[in-house]
Amino acid sequence: MAEKLRMAARVFVYGTLKRGEPNHHWLTKKENGQARFLGRGKTETKFPLVVGTRYNIPFLLARPGEGNNIEGEVYEVDQTMLSKLDILEDYPDYYDREQQTILMEQNESIQCWLYLIRNFPEKMLAKELLISYHNTPERPYNENYLESCPEDLAMDE
Image 1 (tube, rainbow, N blue to C red):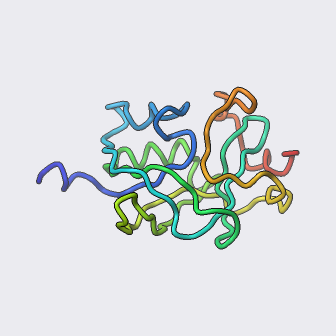
Image 2: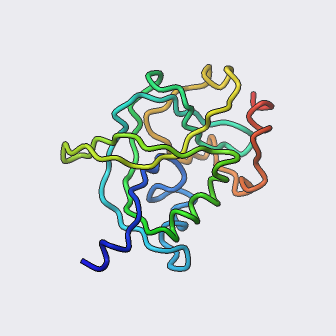
């Protein structure tokens, strides 16, 4: 029971934080706090999920109702981990964070935080709209993502 009390939030991850993806280690490093995998799910609301910028970053665009129900993973995290994820996502300067309903594989609906981009050029919507992100050799995620900034979205082709 004490373990449960320390957990601050549920977070839905759809990109590089998923298991087997380049930034999953953020969720497993003990110095980042605690994270417990709760299961797979998908957004109840459709969103555009695209890969963009020279870093091949997955972006969930704040255009509810467009795109697809996005597949991802749900983690229960403590406040320390949530703060570390905010740093990774450069919240609130680059990504924003909001609560959304996630439909779990067990047909349960839960509220989770997810990170999304509010300010993006319309041309991002012309990109391939994904259901699920996976790092691939054709579009490898660039580990220099920390150099990425909101202006990269405007320069994206």
